[in-house]
Image (cartoon, rainbow, N blue to C red; front, side, top):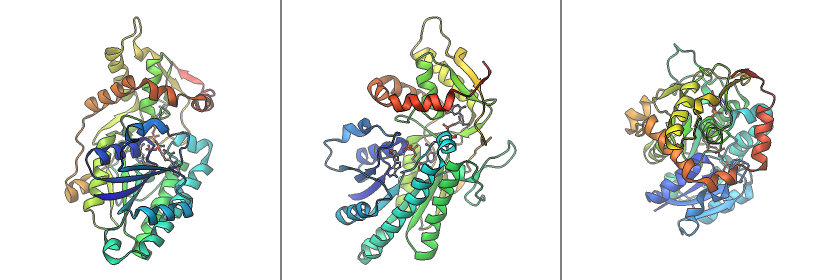
Amino acid sequence: MQTFLVTGGIGFIGSNFILKARKENWANIINLDKLTYASNPQTLAELEDDPGYTFVRGDIAETTLVSQLLEQYQPDAVINFAAESHVDRSIISPLDFVQTNVVGTFQLLETSKSHWEKLSPPKRDRFRFLHVSTDEVYGSLSPSDSAFREDTPYAPNSPYAASKAGSDHLVRAYYHTYGFPVLTTNCSNNYGPRQFPEKLIPLMILNALNGKPLPIYGDGQNVRDWLYVEDHCDAIYLVLQQSQLGETYNIGGNNEQNNLTVVGKICEILDQLAPQAGLSRSSLLTFVKDRPGHDRRYAIDCSKIKRDLGWEPKENFESGLLKTIQWYLDNPVWVEQVLSGSYRQWIEKNYSDREIVRG
Ligand code: NAD
Ligand code: TYD
């Protein structure tokens, strides 16, 4: 059995990855997470008694801690999910994004490289550093542009995207300069269970359930390519096992949808699964002031990962959205835990001065 050091594994994608890794016997897991606002420590409570799972609270930038963990557990791979990940927060507090996404990734790379250099030859050959990144590094597309490919030039527009682009460049440089065995994945928007409700889909699910307004930025015609989170986890595992060193892979759902369509589908499903007398959820749609620098369209060309590794998304949007909504309905305790005081402060900060454009 392999061992993976997963960073940011209490967050949305990392926690889904760890659950899958344990269920499908991919590896033993050491999970290093700082437990920022975006993480609910109860997310992985079901692994409490699992001897193949260890949780460590800490920051990827803490070099002493990270080198101790590498020394003690001798992982076969480091998988870096840890990040500040919300575009709206990056507009308000960009420094946090530079600190974790750029400086943190740099420290993690540097510490991992020092460890790798000391490994015996067979272990050194096996070792991998997989960096989980985003399609947002490529910037924004017009409706007629072709989808992002791995060789599309980087053109990040938000502080979040710029900080992820910076981390991607460092990862690339460690391969080209030092031969450090890196892999990078650039994925489109994920949805699924355990996503913090600051992002579009869980925010809309919980607001709609509670009869609150559904705030659509701008005209609601911005397009994202939505991928079910477990498909992303499978792709990461496949890249880790089979990719050539230094490769980058784009991962996407072949599923472009504009925001109004996505929110409309959530309303329809909730009206069926959790009807409230006299309420049609779509009446809660509210157009609000747009996000500054709001990217219009993202689309991923994932033909390279299909051709090289045979990966394709398995879930379709209708069934994935249904599963996601059902998960939020079935987990009221988790929801209650994340709707804390600091969450309410964020909602107040981000939404209170977006005047209503039309309701
Ligand atoms: P998330 O915000 O839900 O979780 C991030 C986790 O990282 C949290 O548990 C947080 O506590 C932890 N963390 C933050 N700073 C840390 C630090 N300095 N040290 C250790 N842990 C720290 O994010 P997510 O949506 O799960 O995204 C995971 C990764 O995938 C990110 O790198 C993100 O850029 C990338 N990504 C996300 C999406 C998406 O749609 N969510 C799409 C493509 C790529
Ligand atoms: P988000 O989930 O923040 O992901 P990203 O910006 O990283 O793609 O937002 C997805 C889309 O939904 C994006 O076009 C912004 C829009 N959006 C809203 O219209 N209203 C909201 O309250 C939020 C959070 C997002």
